[in-house]
Amino acid sequence: MTVDAVLAIFRRVLPSSDLDVDSDFFTVGGDSLLATRVLSAVARECGVELTFEEFLLAPTPAALAVTIATTVGNGALR
Amino acid sequence: MRVVVVGAGLAGLTAADELTAAGADTVVLEARDRVGGRVHGLEVAPGSWVDAGAAYLGDKHTMLAAALAESDLKTTPTAMVGASRFDLGSLSTRPGRFPPLSAVALGELFDALDEVTSSVRPHAPWLSPDAEARDARSAADWAAEHLRHPDARLFFPLFLGEMMAADPAAISVLHMAFYLRSGGGTGYLNAFEGGAQQDRVDGGSHQLAVALAARLGDRVRLSQPVRAIHQDHRGALVHTAAGTYPADAVVVAVPPLLADEIEYRPGLPVGRAGPGTGRGCAIKVHLVYPAPLWRDAGLSGWSLSSAGPMQSTVDDSPPGVGVLTGFVTGAEALRFSALTAAEQRASVRAQVSGLFPDLPPPTAIHVTDWVAEPYSRGCYAALFGPGDWLQRGPTLTTAHLRVHWAGTETSTEFFGLMEGAIRSGHRVASEIRARY
Image (cartoon, rainbow over all chains, first blue to last red; front, side, top):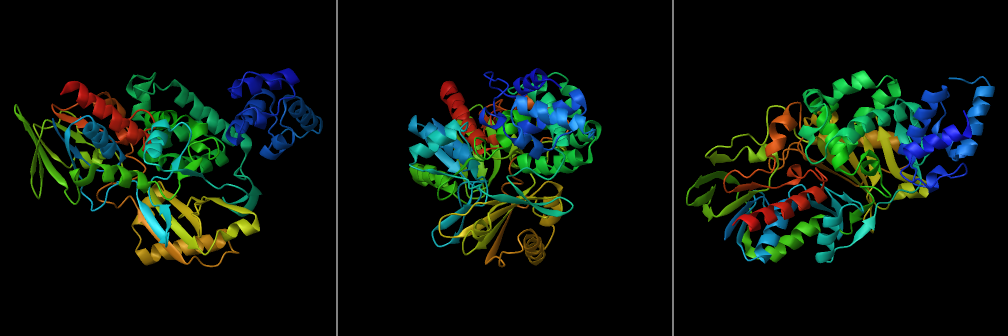
C-alpha cells in the first residue's frame, strides 16, 4: 500500500484537512476510536490486519505504510 | 399567567426558572421528597459527594455550562491516567483504554455505526432515509447482520450499554443512530478527554437542581405526584392527592413512561410511550475506599468486563476519598435489579476483587438502581424500541391543548443527557412565552 493511499485514509477518517505524510494521527485530532477506522480501511484495501499497538508505534502515513509493507513482506497476511 | 410544571428534574426546574423570571406565576409539583430527578447526589464521606445519577459533561454541553456558571458551580476533570483492567474472557492490564480486541473488528463496528448515524436526520429522525426499516428493526438484529467478527459482537453490547444504557434487543436501529448523532457523534459520546465524559460538576451535579430549586423557593412542592390533568375551555386543572392546581399552561417534564401514568382529559392523541418503549437500564454502584489506592499501582480505575455485573468502572473520586463508580447496564441491569441487596453486594465484591486484586475490600458499597426507581423508570433515558420513532417522533414536542412537554427525551439535541434536559426546559419556556 502506498504512502499516498494511507494518507487518503487518514484524510477520510480525520476531520482535519491539513495533513501530510508525516502527520502524527494522534496529534491532529485522531483518537483510539478513529484509529480503529484507519485499521479497518487498511484491512479492507490491502488485506493487512494491524493491531492498535502497531499503529501507536507508526502513527504517520509514512510510518504506517512501512509497517504495512513489512507485514506483507514477512508473509504475515492475516 | 399561571404555569404548573410537573417534575422537578433539570428540565422542569429550568423551565420554571425561566418562566418565573419572565413574570409567570409558577408552581412545580414533584413526586419525590427531593428535587433533581435523575440527577442525584450521594454523600459517601462527610462533605464528599458523588453522582448517583447523571454525572458527566463536555465542551459541547453549552447550556449546562451556562446554567452551572449562573449558579457559581465549577467543573472538575474526570481522572483517567494510567493503565486499564480488562476482563473480556481473560484478565489483562493494558495502558490506556483500548481493549485487548481486534482493532480491525472494532473499526468495522464503528464503520457500520458511522453509516447509520451519518444518514440520520438529527432533528427529525422519522424523516431519515430508510427510516421505516430502521425503526422496525432492533439494534440486535442489525448487529447480527453487520458484525461478523466475534470481537465486534462481544464489544457491541458493552458499547451500547455504556453509551445508552441499552440492551441492543430493546432499541430500534433508528434510535441507536439518532442517539449517537444527537449526543455529538459516536466519538464524542465515547470520549473522556475532549468528549462527553470530560468533566464532572465539582461537588456533584445535584447542586444545580438544588440551586435552581432554591431560586424558586416555595414554588416547588415536594411529595406531590400528579394524578390527572383535566382541560376545558377555561384552562387546565392539575390534580395531586393533596390538591388541585389551576393553570393556563402545564409543562409535563417527566420521562415518557411516567407521563403516560397521568390521566389526561381529554386524552392524548398519541401516548408518550408505547409497548416497545423501555426503561433505560442503568444501575450505578459506588465502591468507596479510604483513598484512590489504584493510582499507586499505576491504574486509572477504568475497567471493562464482559462477565458483569459491572461492565465498567471509572475513578470518580471526590477530594478526600477513593470512589470507583461501577456501571451495570443493559440486559445485565435487569438481572442485577432482580437480586437481593445482599446478593448485589456479594457479586460486586467478588467481581472487584478479581479486577483489582491488590485493593482492600471497599469500606462501603452504594447501589443506585434506576431501573427500579418508581419516579424515574430507568436511566439514562427512555429507550425507544421498534416502532417508537415513527409513531411518536412527529409529536414529541407537540402541545396537547395547554399541556406542553419537556424532559431530555423531548430534546433532539443531546437526548438522554443533562444538556438535553436543560435545552428542553428552555424550548418549552419559549413555547409558552410565545403562546400565552
